Image 1 (cartoon, helix red, strand yellow):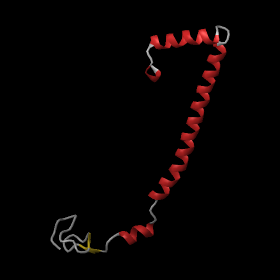
Image 2: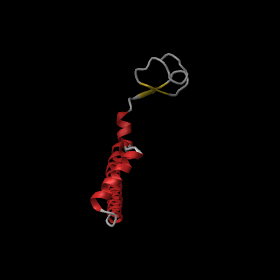
Image 3: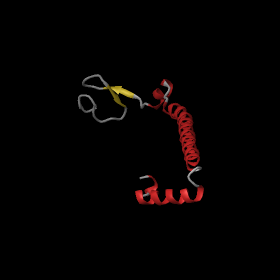
Image 4: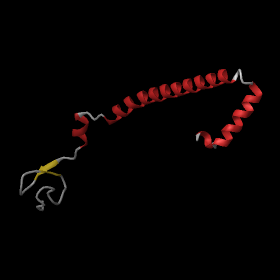
Length: 101
């Protein structure tokens, strides 16, 4: 149940509202509460979407890597003495064949 209310709690609230507002105004009150809830959901959904749209481009920009940046970040490599594959400079063993360098 919403807000942790039990059915008997809802019944008591309905009886109190009936006594306070009278039977003629209850449908009007129910419609206004329903429209208020609908507007609240719509506003929340729009706010969530706009926030997601604002955050998404920032995430994409931070994840983009330019080819020039990748080359500058890679350590220099030398060819393996055994298989000829590139091995990071200073490595003691080839990552492909395992030969000592």
